[in-house]
Length: 82
Image (cartoon, rainbow, N blue to C red; front, side, top):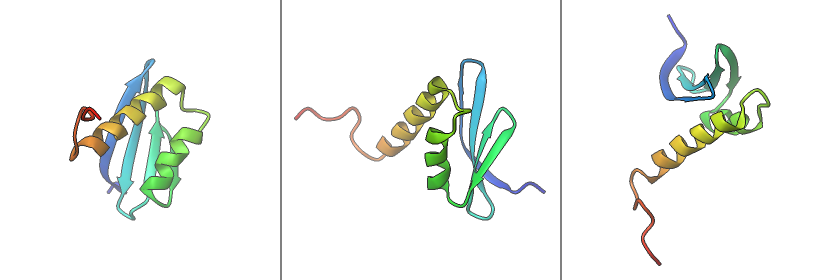
């Protein structure tokens, strides 16, 4: 049985794939083309994606776009005019 509860994000850029998994333990896992990195929380896993040298800029930008889209899901989009 896999320890992955759910894959939250799967992004692609420049022929590479980055997946962000939520584990059954509540930890977060980054999976970059089969190379994995676990953190005790999902938030720390997302922070680690920004700091992990193996994640190219275009791939992290794709993840950041997905995170921004998720954050705006319940709010106004696009931002209302001031």
